[in-house]
Image (cartoon, rainbow, N blue to C red; front, side, top):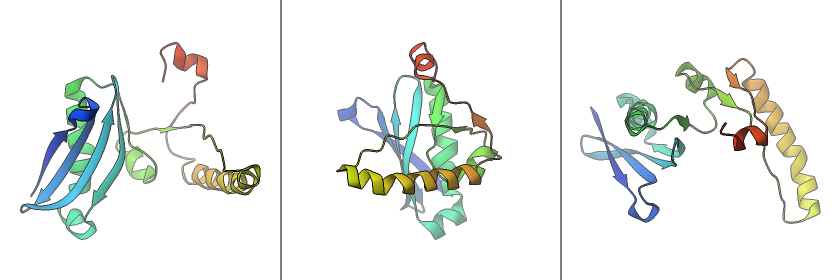
Length: 147
C-alpha cells in the first residue's frame, strides 16, 4: 500500500505543495503542484516506474490526492500538463488550445525552430483530435473573468 504526504513551501506562501508517495517507507514518487487563487497546476511528477506501477502510485499521487485537496481548498480548475492525453480525458480532463510564444536567440534561430514547432503542434493535434476540447478564448474574455 502506498501512502502520500504533503509539504507546503513557506517561501512561496504555501502556493507550492510537494506530494510524496512511499511504499513500505521507501520513496517511490514525487509531485510538485503550484497554486493560485482558483487554480492548481501540476507541472512535474516523478515515479519509480516498476514500483509505482505495482502500487498505483501514479494515480494516487497525480490524480486522487491533489483533486481531493483542491476541492477541499475551493480551487475551481486544475491543469494537468501535457502528454498522456487519452488517460487524462478518461478522467474528465479537457484539452485547452493554447498559444506558444517562440523567441529564439536570433532571427536565424527562430527561423530554424519555427517549422519544428509547427510540425510538433500538428502531431499533437492529430493525436488528440478525438479528445474533448475546451474552446480557446480571446484575451478580452480572459480579462472579463474567463479562463
